[in-house]
Image 1 (cartoon, rainbow, N blue to C red):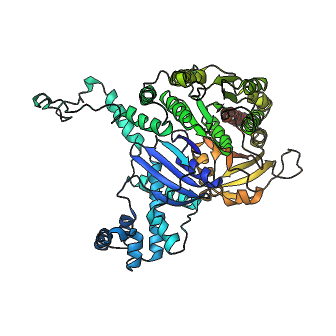
Image 2: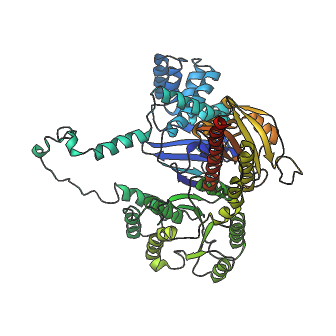
Image 3: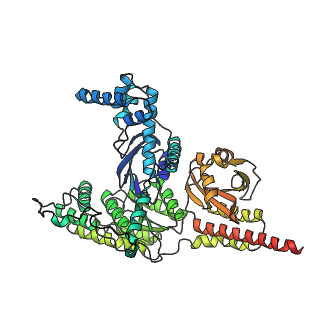
Length: 586
């Protein structure tokens, strides 16, 4: 496991871009209500795909593209079946028979990847996990590098943009139905009042003859180990903890499928947990419990993903709880030192971040070190090698306690950010001109990030005005005007923010921002950007762009910046209103 989480909290677009920018190799499995789809990555590039729908295969894609006829496909499938042990992939059969050109087959495999991404884009709920130890390339995709000495390495950003285009076209033409539509229909049906006259009868449900059916008991009892949610958990626990006795596996499985107790914090917000650790059983159990309790959860064992998950949580209005698992069997040596160093680093980068350290009951030194370094919460974790006779009870008590800890009142993470932004709010009280208000937002974004640029909205394009942090030796002073222009047609993300008026903080590919921006100020180390619109009288006046330059991404208090931009818009509206009132009198 490299990382895992929920699609509800991190979109598939963000996941694919993250894997591309971090140059990861592995199999990304995405599971939803319809089943499971897979995308295989090699050094950040997509090299294979498995669609959840078995009917979406390379043969049908070639037929729909009119590369081959249905008769040719049926004959090739029959030839495959007759080949027995000498069976070859369908692509190989068609190419070697001269029925398909190599270029058309390559394009068909690329289309299969795009359609797999398009399908996942319609899933609003589900889970994802990246397995870096498993790179499962299907037979169709292996044929090109193994037999034709030609690698199938598709540029991830191009595939993603094509998939988004196909998704928009299909959605526009009514060929795609997102899962939320089904859920809304069922919700409306359940909420329909009895007096509306729209009632479902037994006949509507096919149950009209239920009383006349012969009642029979099943010949055998279907136990826990055969089917049901608990059985699925049993199989997973058996895989992760084969040494755990069977009865204990079943008891743990029943605990993991129990109903939720509560789903939100005392203030009504949805908490977020980011678990950093390598214990597969503990990770699975904590992840399952958190999901059941309505707690957003990410898990990873790689440092490079922590900042991304922290930023995503903050962008969605949640204050994350960063949980570090205990080091190995002993707190001594490199593992303990590495965790302590990482914990110290994240604490320095974001002092308001809530930290939790799981510790071994035997490792007093590591426990005291964590407390001495200011970790707010230290929790003993269950360990089978330390207390084998009580391990299951320890684990169940730990899993019961953990959600309550996550919901417990903590120091407000935004208190430090409020202090930093207070001068900006004060400055708005004495300003009335658009350039002055845009400068306040520019300074606030530069303080939150590292670099900031004011982009003035003019019709169908943006004009770069002043900037902070993009010119060496500027001592954080605003410089400009920069003068370059960005057509909104070439910058999908900027266009979306201008059209919606909603701020954005997250991962963005260069192609979604317009090539002119990156070419002029230089690409940041990480593709995490902040876009803060200034709106007045129902129109977007400007966008303030921010990124972190050549340093790592840090959390951003997007809610406070949005409030600041809203206040600036109100100040501008009031100034325009006063001018209109004064004009007739003059």
